[in-house]
Amino acid sequence: VLDGLRHLEYRGYDSAGLAVLDRAGELQVRREVGKLANLSRLVDEAPVEGQIAIGHTRWATHGPPTQFNAHPHVSGGGLLAVVQNGIVENYHALRERLIGEGYVFTSDTDTEVIAHLVHLYYQNGSHGDLVDATRRALGDLRGPSAVVVVCRDHPDKLVAARLGNAGGVAVGYGEGEMLIASDIPALAPHTRRIAYLDDRQMAVLTANGADYFTLDGEPLVKDASRLEWDADAVDRGEFHHFMQKEIFEQGRSLTDTLRGRLDFVGGQVRLDSLNLSAEQVRTLEKITIVACGTSYFAGLVGKFLVERLARLPVEVDYASEFRYRQPIVNPQQLVLAITQSGETVDTLAALEEARRRGARTAAIVNATGSQAARVCDGIIAMQAGPEIGVASTKAFTASVVDLCLFALYMAQARGAVDETARRELLDALVRLPGQVGELLAEARQGDHYARLAARFGEFSNFLYLGRGIHYPIALEGALKLKEISYIHAEGYPAGEMKHGPIALIDGQTPTLVIAPRDSIYEKMVSQVEQVRARGGAVLAVAHAEDAQMRQLADAILPIPVTHELLTPVLSVIPLQILAYEVALHRGADVDQPRNLAKSVTVE
Ligand code: AGP
Image (cartoon, rainbow, N blue to C red):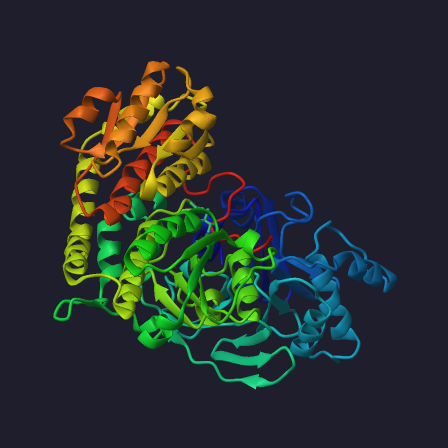
C-alpha cells in the first residue's frame, strides 16, 4: 500500500493514511499529515502485518489537512474503514441524520459520513452484508465518489464503488493477489491486467479475483485489458524528476504518437479509433474543442491547424466555461475534448453537456482506460506513455501532433488540401521526432538553461509573447513557469503589447518572445526592439541560425527549422526546459508543486 501511494504522490496531497486487517482480525489504522515519509515513520514505529489493507493520500477539500481528517475513516468502533476520492455534496444533511442516529464524528471531513452510513446499513437492513450496505450507502450520496471499504467481519474482501466522475477506479489482477487503485501507476509494478469501474459500478475483490455489479445490484461481466506500458514507465530512471524525464523523452513519445497513423503509400492519415467516416466528416459544419489548462492551449494550436488545413470553423472553449454556457451545439458539430488524464471533471462535464445537446463527441486522450475514453464516440490516443509530473509536457506535444493528424484527416475527407501541401506536411511530421530528439540532446549536454535560470530565476514577473500559431505557446510557456516555480508569468498575443502590457516593461520584467523566422517574423523583431528600448530583457525562442535575433535579444533559446504548422511542437520545448531549470534554481518541488494535483477530478 505504501509503495502504491508513492506511485500516486504526483497527484498532489497533504496527508496520508492506511488501514490493515491484522493477523488478530483487528483493523489497525495509521494516519499522518504531510508527506508519505511521515506515514512510513509511523508504520516503522508500530509495524502491522496483514493480508488485506487500504491506503489514501488526501488533497483537502472539506476540513484542513490534519491527522484526524486523513483517510481512512473508521466506523463501528473499528469494525470497518473507508477511503474516498470525490465530494459528498449532501454531507451536511447526512451528518445531521447520522448524529441523530447516535454517531459521534471525529473529523470535519465529508468522507466520514460514508463510513458511518455503511455501518448504519450494515447493522440495520443489510444484516451483515457488506456489499449491500456499501450499495445502500452510495445510494444516499450526492456528488462524485470513488470508495473502497474494508471490514473486520470480512477479512477476505475489499468492496469498491464508483459514483460519477471522481477520478478513475482500476482493478489490477496480480499473481495470487488483487489490487485496486485510482490510477494505473500504483498497479503497473504489480500487474499489466487491468479492469476499470464505470459510473455507478461496484467491484468485490478477493485474493483470487473480482466480481462486478451495478449499484442496483445487477451482476456485470468485465474483461481485464492489457496495460500497454510496463513498470519502468512509472519510474524516474536516471532523471531527477518525472517532469525532467517526460521533457527529455518527447523524441520517443512523439514517435509513438505517430505510430500506425501515417500510410506512406497513399500519403494518407489513418485514425480508425476516431470512429468518424469521411461521409460523417463532410456533414460537419463546426468543431468545438473543450479542455482545461495545458490541454486548452493545445486546443488553441489545433484551431490554427484545422482551420488552415481542413477549412472548417473551430471554436476553442475552456471546459469549465462551456459546461455552464448553454452552448449552441447540434448534430452537425463535433465536440472534441483534449485531456491527458481523461478524468478532468470539467472536461467530462463539458462532454456530457455536448452529448446532451446532440453533438458527436471525441477525445484526444492519453489514459485510454479513463472515463473520457469510454464516454466519447471516438478517440485519438496520445500514445505518449504515462505522464506523472504535474506539469504537463509530453502530453502537450502529443496533443499538438494528434491535432495535426486530425486536421489532415478532416482535410482528406473534405478534399480541402492539395497533394503537394499534404506531402510536405507529412514529410515534416515524419522528421519531427528526430528533430525533437536532437534539440533535447543538445539541451541536455550543455548548461545553457541552467545558466539562463541562474540569470533570470530571481525575477518575480515574466511576460511571454507570441503571434499567430505561437500565441498559444506563449500561454503554455507562461503556465509552465508559474505552476512549478510560482513566478507570476503572463502569456499575451504579441500584437496586444501596445494595448496595455507594454506598461509592464521595465528592468524587472523579462520578456520571452517566440520568434521563429516565419511569415510574421519582422513584427516580432519590432516587438523585441520596443521591449529593449524600455530596458526590458528579452529571451527569444528563435531558429538556431538566426544571427539577427542573436544580435537583438539578451538570450536565445534555439530551435531547428520545420514546417510552420509544426513549429509549436519545437518552440514549446525550450520553454518547458527553462521552467524546469528555474524551478530547480528556486528549490521548488518540481513534481508536486504546491496546491496542484495532476488530475483535477473534483471541482
Ligand atoms: C498543466 O501543466 C497542468 N497540469 C494542468 O493545467 C492540466 O493541463 C489540466 O489540469 C488538464 O488536465 P487534463 O489534460 O488531464 O485534462
